[in-house]
Length: 65
Ligand code: SF4
Ligand code: SF4
Image 1 (cartoon, rainbow, N blue to C red):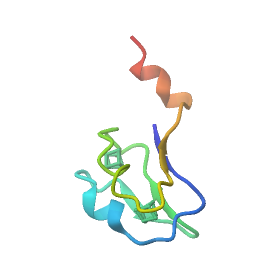
Image 2 (image 1 turned 90 degrees about the vertical axis):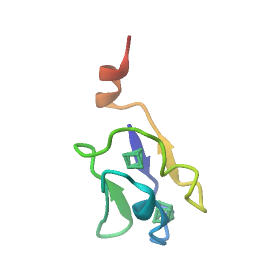
Image 3 (image 1 turned 45 degrees about the vertical axis):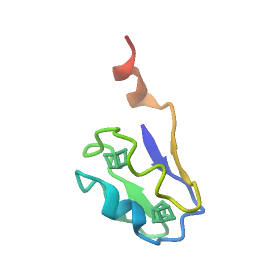
Image 4 (image 1 turned 120 degrees about the vertical axis):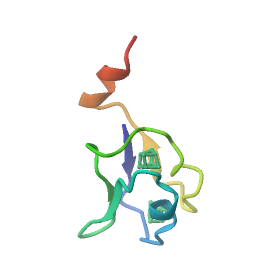
């Protein structure tokens, strides 16, 4: 699953890139709504700070073969 790190400066570039509007402004930084994200990875390269990462989590198991 994709996540946004704490160093996000809320530039909003990732929001424009997400095809399913899964990124929203949170209280401190932007956040990815896991229920909406389709794991396309399009947001990762547009982040100037590189704080969007793919991380294994509870949902990662659904992608296992
Ligand atoms: S991985 Fe794709 S669907 Fe998920 S937040 Fe990034 S751009 Fe949106
Ligand atoms: S592109 Fe990166 S720094 Fe900009 S709002 Fe998205 S996660 Fe935050």
